[in-house]
Amino acid sequence: MPAPERIPSRSLTGTELVDLLTEGELTVLGQIRGASNAVLYCTVARDGEEAACVYKPVAGEQPLWDFPDGTLAAREVAAYEISEATGWGLVPPTVLRDGPYGEGMCQLWIDAAPQREDGDENGGDGEAGEPPLLALVEDEEPGKGWKAVAHAEVGEGRTALLVHADDARLRRLAVLDAVINNGDRKGGHLLPAPGGRLYGIDHGVTFNADDKLRTLLWGWAGEPLTAEAVEVVERLGAELAPGTPLVTRLAELITEVEIEALRGRVAGLRATGRHPEPSGQWPSIPWPPV
Image 1: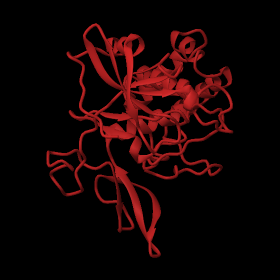
Image 2: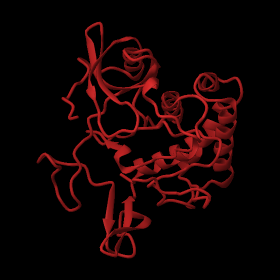
Image 3: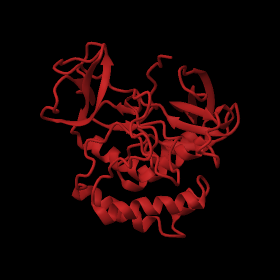
C-alpha cells in the first residue's frame, strides 16, 4: 500500500526513536501486500510525537524448516543491534514489542527517495532522483562505477549481466550481510533515503549457524576489505566477547549456537581481510532477486 509521508514532529535522536517505537501507542492503518509473512503499516505515537512504522507480529510468521529456533522478528532486531554496533546505522531503528496482534517486530518506516533511470536526472515522480543501485546491462563486463554479480536470463533465450553500483554504502551493507549471514538480500530490500542515506530492511532470514549468505551484492567477492571495514570487524570481535552488553542483548534474540557462529564469521573476516565468496553449497542469489 502507498504510505503517506509521516515524520516525527521534531527531529528525534536514535535513542528517542527507539523509545517511541517501544513505548508508543501502535495503531494499525493497513497491511502491506505481497509479503510471505504478515507486514502491517502503522503509526506509533507518544507525548505528542508520532512516526510511521512497520509491525510484523510473530503470530503472522510462516515457519521455516531451516530456522526452527526463535522468531524472524527477533532476528530482525538482532540485525539492528549488529548494525548499530558497526556504527554504520544501516538498519532502521527496530524493536521487539507487544502490539495489537501480540509480540512482534516494530521498525521505523523509511520513505525511500525516488531512483532515476540510468542516464536520467529525475526519479519516478519528476523530482531529482537517486542514481540506480542495480541494473541489467547487455555488455559482457560492467562499465565504470559498476560491479558484476551474475548473468541472468531476460527472456527469448537472451541473457544480461546483473550489476550493482560500486557504492561505498552498498559495500558496507555487503560486510554487514556477511556478518549476520543474510540469506535474502534482494534489490527491494535496499532503501536509499533522502539526503544520501542508505538503509537495508527485511532481516528475518539471518544468523543461521550454517552458511546461508544469499545476496545481490557479490561484486566485491574476494576483494580486500576497506580499511574502515577492517576496523569495524576488529571492534565487533571485541564487542562479541562473552558477557559484553551486546552479547547480553543478542542472547535474548538468538541462540547461543547462533551467537557462536556469529563470532566465527567475524573472526573469519578478521583473518582473511577479504569479502567472502559464494560457498557453492547454497544458492548464492536470492529468488526472486527483487
